[in-house]
Length: 375
Image (cartoon, rainbow, N blue to C red; front, side, top):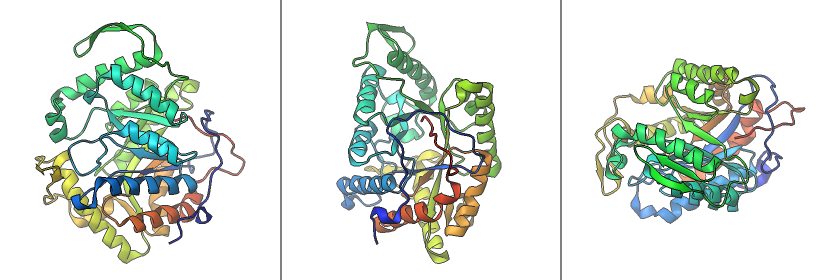
């Protein structure tokens, strides 16, 4: 397999460009590769897992993807990235223009007085390509063991977000709240410019309110149906429209498991792999959270294999274009592809390249569009 740039459509975009999106219709979508580490076999080694992710990022950068995304999770062998800002800096050193999204950094697990300085440094070290996505945490197993159970993570997240925003925007910040109490202090160094923030939100009404507050949005329907996706996007559009010009640069990124298969047989294999992956994901997301020495147990799924196939975006080229059409028509700005669910690295790299060459041109900007988007 050729992993060189010759098979890719390379975009030209200045680093740090911060201009408004031109309205060229609903067909334009940017694409992002979710670098989600899946570690079903400890013998593979963490060093190889992260080397694979770096290789995926380098190819995504050459092939014209808008962004790569990394997530923060601890103590478990899926979505395994306990140091997202460190990895963001490494990704920037290995790529040229691709945006780097933390999707997400789990605020309740950190002291904002420390995290704010780390964010400023990461923004500098990534050449201001960082989009800081933040969230409250999702898996009870890791949140309980790290001392922030889910039943308090929402209120701690809300206060943490307020503290983080204040520290990044202002000097001599003091605080007297439920989770933070401190005398005046100033985070150093100061940000060179405003660091874009995105919130991980799933409920449509919450998306609307967070959009009205000026945040970029990271969302996913997960196992929800097409109507949920439409409701999520419509809530974002409604909130953005109410902000008029102030919301012009806000973006909605929507994540799904996606893979460009070679043929129907390959699609069936990948759907089975994804179904097996979700037998672990469901365990820690909605299930009992049974984990043995870091390895999540595979449990029977309530969803059938046929339902999994319907819910995911795993398809051959023509089918993939058809499946992505509704997302483009709804107004999704960035489609985040989770491609790491058990396929071999060589297959993942081939899928990334083929998707760029065979699918992305159908959702590209019009030839005379010149502006990019913040975030």
